[in-house]
Image (tube, rainbow, N blue to C red; front, side):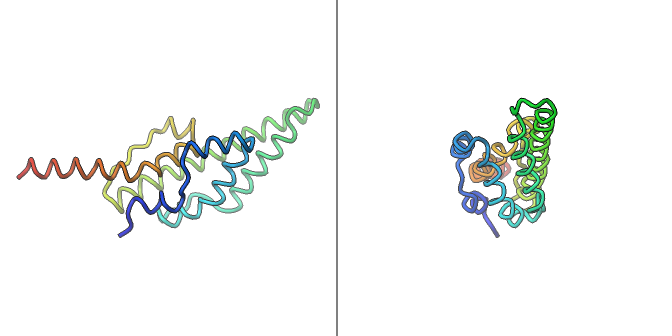
Length: 155
């Protein structure tokens, strides 16, 4: 049986590094991170969260949105804004799919009731998913302590 460390070890990205790399690359790194790691998440959780085409559309929307914004042309600025919003929406949709996959995975494979905040998923999407993946071993440790305390009280 796989451990909760498996997903964390395979992805191996600290959330602070993800944020800093996002700033350093002007927003490009989350797309790279997602492209690199969605298949790992899918394989470990056994759920489909994305496809290459989906991630390419995120990149297209983000890239063209950035290219068209701030050009000074009214219609291009509007199109750029719409594409930027579309990119954000696609990230949010992926984050909720990943959230569902992680909750299902931890419950079925490890008997852990993972509590993931919907609001944080909406606001921080990819960063919150990465944070929760990194926190899985700690959540498992706490769950084990709680369960062992309940078992000893019942005895």
